[in-house]
Amino acid sequence: MAAHLSYGRVNLNVLREAVRRELREFLDKCAGSKAIVWDEYLTGPFGLIAQYSLLKEHEVEKMFTLKGSRLPAADVKNIIFFVRPRLELMDIIAENVLSEDRRGPARDFHILFVPRRSLLCEQRLKDLGVLGSFIHREEYSLDLIPFDGDLLSMESECAFKECYLEGDQTSLYHAAKGLMTLQALYGTIPQIFGKGECARVRTGLETGFHHVDQDGLDLLTSHCTQVLIPFHCRSGYVKLPPEKFAPKKQGDGGKDLPTEAKKLQLNSAEELYAEIRDKNFNAVGSVLSKKAKIISAAFEERHNAKTVGEIKQFVSQLPHMQAARGSLANHTSIAELIKDVTTSEDFFDKLTVEQEFMSGIDTDKVNNYIEDCIAQKHSLIKVLRLVCLQSVCNSGLKQKTYGYEHILTLHNLEKAGLLKPQTGGRNNYPTIRKTLRLWMDDVNEQNPTDISYVYSGYAPLSVRLAQLLSRPGWRSIEEVLRILPGPHFEERQPLPTGLQKKRQPGENRVTLVFFLGGVTFAEIAALRFLSQLEDGGTEYVVATTKLMNGTSWIEALMEKPF
Image 1 (tube, rainbow, N blue to C red):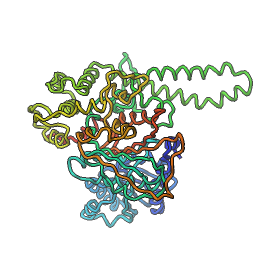
Image 2: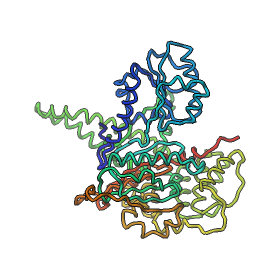
Image 3: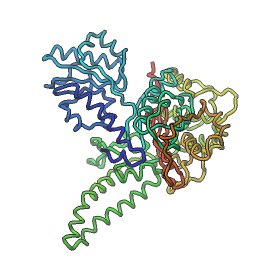
Image 4: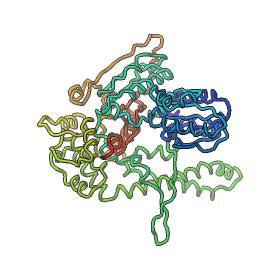
């Protein structure tokens, strides 16, 4: 059992064990020694539910990454392909199978589609002449993956693009399946609230199974409702892509030499990470300093150990103390690397522009910083994030000519509602900002009192909606809800009287917030902040189609230039 999945009222180990059991059952169908060929994108999600030790228990001897041409040599009876249902992957699989057939001796081939079996993919394999080579062709419904005790993700990298650009609602079907699975394991969700074009995924909400706290809630929010959030640079510890923080070492002459990247599995099981992950970055240094003093004092206690009993007690605590010291060293190094970025002049200039837009300053004027970024050929993604942020805050941009090589990307952004020309209509953002208190001038980053601390002033719209839903309710903001994109709704699933379970005195209600299209770590941090409020009365669990940031979101909407 994974300890970090069971600290909340919803024990996500139950879900993890259910998907592990399904995996074991499939592996046991393929009797004999096995080699798994992985779609590389799946290795991360599978690592969260099944380590190599579990696979080894079921006779998995070799693992390879799916690549073209011939597979590496492996003396095994079964070769199993774990893949997403993508046509381009079927071409690679066919190449692998045909090369193995020529090599000999005969192997048993199997294919496991994640998360769904695809008739189109099977037809492609048939056209390539290899469909009959597979003994088992099955699907593995890995719809929601537990990342932490309060966090679930489908890790569907194209969910937003599919839903809002291509009109493909497949990811919504899998979101509904995931909700059905949660209800089967934990009980019926009696109250459902939703906001946004894609929020009404009722398919997974119409069948109840067991008893549940009758005050439990589920909030479905479509990402088009909170398009500002990914464009703003978060001020928290968990925010920037890990490739920015590759460790370095000093070489001759004081030059930085790159070293191998060090992978760290970070979750709430690590005490220090759980303490600092949701803090504003300006508050992280003091926490690390305080922790360093505590650890140093703990090691100094060895000098005070005089008796055998005291020495034995110190030795028993030594492994935990050494792990804490190692954790402190890792996070101190990460903090130093992040600080190099956040204290740079360009980062400060970018953050200033973002905060001016969010607070409604000069959104209708040509921004000199954006013009300079374009002239100096800064990253296209950086420019697009700023341009989209200004467009959303100003209800459009003055028409201007852009590079033709990016016309398809600009078209995608316009179709998604992130870029649009000014039409002379009313700009609703100032009304939304003031009514929902999305911008706070005086933010206490060290000891926050409001969710706006995650962006050093801006309160994530989606989380503010969740907060207001809990207290005093959405009826107090009906006018603003009508202004925001997409419909809003409320539904109830009746429960038989005998299955209802009342909350105990002092027991918080549990609210599942499902972000369709993706969620940022800032939104997660803000919801965790609300869960920890003494008078909050609500414990939040987050589910999403994808964990993302502004860069990954824009990348998903980009098209390759001509």
